[in-house]
Image 1 (cartoon, rainbow, N blue to C red):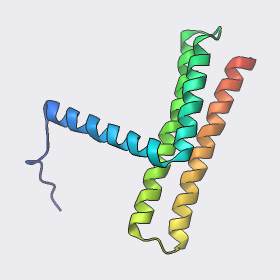
Image 2 (cartoon, one colour; image 1 turned 30 degrees about the horizontal axis):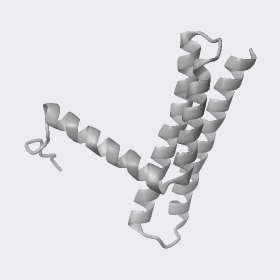
Image 3 (tube, rainbow, N blue to C red; image 1 turned 90 degrees about the vertical axis):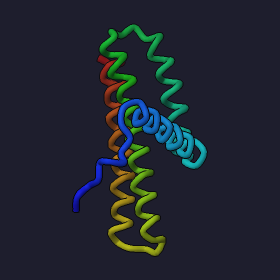
Image 4 (cartoon, rainbow, N blue to C red; image 1 turned 90 degrees about the horizontal axis):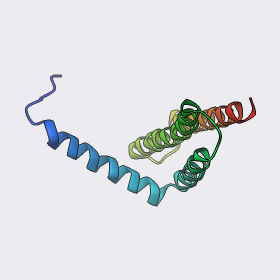
Length: 123
């Protein structure tokens, strides 16, 4: 199968389109995913807290990046769930596994965030 590149957007049109799609996705997540809303509140709160901590710029970057990783993973988990639900709502072992693995990825990202924050603040 050959991909047709002739109709693809390029330059500023591509960048603008990508930005609009990103905004649409983030808006959908904020309106429909309670976990994402909670993680955005956590991110916002801790990002502000990080500004008042006596840490280096690199440590602050690590603290904020660890929080962004949680948002990234939650977004990918939601994308997996959307694709699985698009395929069908009836129970299938692999569909359940895909959703469970996405959830596990979010949990691992939370462990990473807690570890980074604990490591920087306690050592």
